[in-house]
Image 1 (cartoon, rainbow, N blue to C red):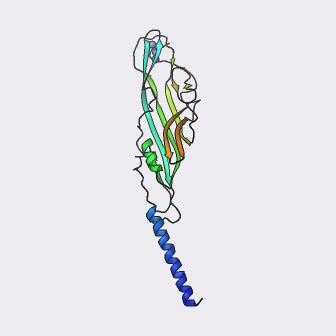
Image 2 (image 1 turned 30 degrees about the horizontal axis):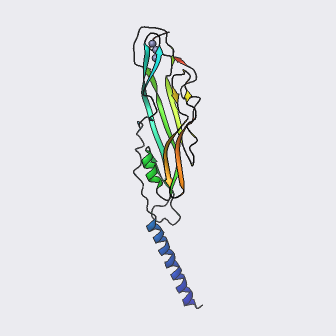
Length: 213
Ligand SMILES: [Zn+2]
Ligand SMILES: [Zn+2]
Ligand SMILES: [Zn+2]
């Protein structure tokens, strides 16, 4: 090959590579829903969560306790890892969501990666009746539930509910959040799993403070 021909071949190679990279960039479009405001700490409580708890008591008959939320926060992180060819927005980007539909929409991006999720529920059940001092059975007080989001091709089932030490409040060990189909042959399931079953409600039963023992 002459020197001139060699130069021509390398110029063509560079041009071809440039065209390939531009095409890859053209077909790689990110469509992510807007991410969550990082300061929002009051997302909805899970549907199974009882905002009001009743427990039997000799004097009040049914003693109502209302849940006072300190924090209810869902944070699911999706990382966008673009290919090596990405020209204009290099480096991974993270998006945080609190909603199953938005997580599903973000995962539709080819380069999206599920990086993990937590659902934290903190607060306390406070009695809503004021009575004369009387003996009262135990009731749950401070609650701190920490659920972690799992992803797999088979939800292992809810399992047995877990009781707090007072025996009044039962919470699920796991629950299914949503299913995400990858046509034609794959369906992923996303479920929440309790991370702190032994400590979500304090170590020992507390007497209900609606009446003093
Ligand atoms: Zn009572
Ligand atoms: Zn009570
Ligand atoms: Zn009571």
